[in-house]
Length: 142
Image 1 (cartoon, one colour):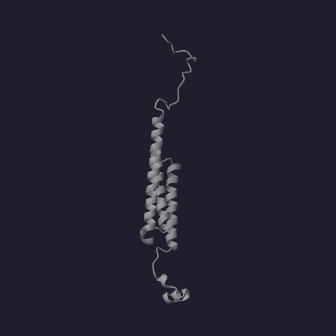
Image 2 (cartoon, one colour):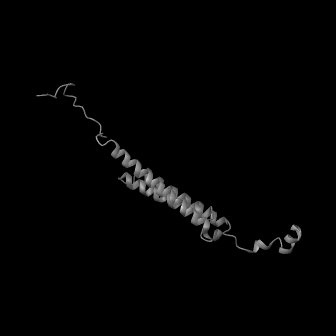
Image 3 (spheres, one colour):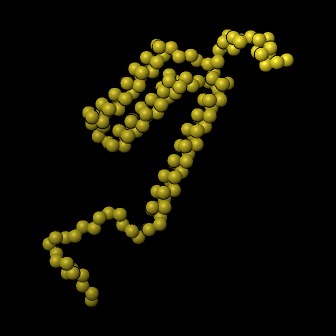
């Protein structure tokens, strides 16, 4: 059977009847676009309005909105869900996210503990010199 005969026998447009995954729609893109604007504007307002007194809270809020925005982009612009390619695209993305998170957390943990434990006698606070006392005085050896 030649390639042309094989192609003609199975029909050229057979694959168009199957749902290969989500298709782009204008409304889908607009929903993603407006969600992206909102998810950018909220952290911007949090920082510019100095909403939280604690800097750690501000960083956590910004990180949360960043993660939500990544998910919105994956769903509305990259069209990733559990149905595309039998869910393997979503599963590989989740695996990558977990792998990167574990790697970053482990790296930061190791670096923190190496910094803390490598030089235990090293004081990280700046030395305060008393301006009233001339240099060299105040230490007596009896």
